[in-house]
Amino acid sequence: MTGRAPLVVVGNPENRRVTLFRAAATEAGVPVVVLPWRRLATGPVRLPRAAVVRIDSPGEDAEVDRLLRGADRPAEHGEIVGLAAWYAGFRAALGRLGEAARSAGATLLNDPDDVLAMFDKRACHARLTAARVPVPPALPTAPSALPTASPGRMASPAPAAPPGLTASPAPAAPPGPVGSPGPTAPSAPPAPSTSVGLALRGGSTGGYPELRAAMRAAGWSRVFVKPAHGSSASGVLALQVAPGRIRATTSVELTAGGKLYNSLRVRDYTDERQVAAIVDRLAPDGLHVERWFPKAGLGDRTVDLRVLVVAGLPEHVVVRASRGPLTNLHLGNARADLSALRAAMGEPAYAAALQSCVRAAACFPGSLHVGVDLLVGTGWQRHVVAEVNAFGDLLPGLSDPAGRDSYAAELHALRTGRFDRWRADAPTLLGSTAEPEPTTGTGTGAEPASTARLESAAGSDGWGPRRAGDGGIGQHENPGRDRKVGRAA
Image 1 (tube, rainbow, N blue to C red):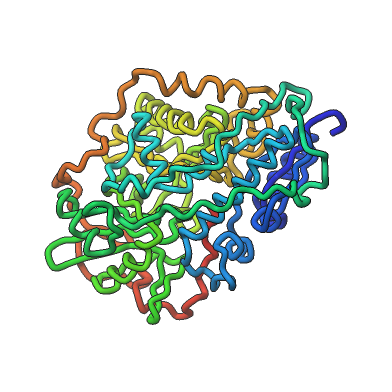
Image 2: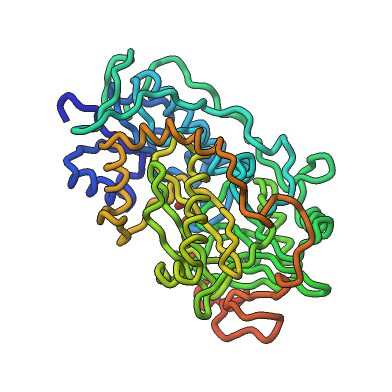
């Protein structure tokens, strides 16, 4: 790419995300240089002058996980541990990358502030709420639990129009190999973790008793309990309570020694002591608790959507179908027919839902792409944005109307200058006076009677006998066989 800005990918070199993106870039005639996360996680780095930099997921690498947590040993396979410490290390690493980008006059395709907000579910929910994007109501979070300092939003030059990926020249430090040690001036020390547990009674760190008290105060019997800094459904509990009964549907495996593991098998916990043990183990690293939003179904499965928004266009949509409340595809769930969903919703409701996804993406204008998790309510007319994912573009086998996969679409948005226009237009979009979806605010009203049914991991209603093969606690033939390294994002 003589005379053009080099394209640098921050990622784990052997990970499929990097290899798939490199394949798309090669097909587009764009050479890629990889800056390993292992290098960025250990200290300052240099970038080529005027580089264009894509940040990809640090997940699925045990050593990167250890480095970001600042731990002396890797986590056990699938172990859920040190989420707040991981976030602090992630934050510090992005700070170093931001400094390197400023020194090199580089363009970041994922703004560090955006990425950090998307990796803190409380901050993401607050940002969406402020922009009047419809979201599920959430239990309150203490102000001290939200991030205050950040690596700073990059005022980086924009990628140029075709024929290549270029960036405006800027004063830079002397060039060095990608990922080589940066300037001798030390980068800012890692900010202390601001994560706390559920905020109640003046912002104290809470656990299971505080969670139940907050649910009673809100009048909610069904909630989703999420680690503030988790991903890929790791640590998420779909929690339902009734007098004398409880059910938590989750992929968490609780061992006899009290450790938690991220599993590929969804199970139900109906012993309150076990549910309390899981919540209490997760709470010190921060929790985000949302009211359960009853989702629409196709056939015998509930569905939701992953919508990839690339520079303002929501053209890659996956319908995820499950017999239980957790729809992540890696948990054994299936893709469903988008045309059937559109027919059930009707085109006006579907268009309104996609527009909410675009508005959600506009809350992160420094990011070329975001993956929006969209929930459609029973009756097909209401919808909410559950989460926004910084690295939600791993969608193999899915194309936009022009036949481009997710990575080719991102490269196209760069080459045509659409990302440049999107960054300029996004604030205007959020400044519109469009009303959010009715009935989906962030208040804490008591839930309607129609949401009182109780679901198991297998999707059955009520508290009847469990089905064989549900994967309940204590029913694993080979504990650990189905564990998954977390933070795949």
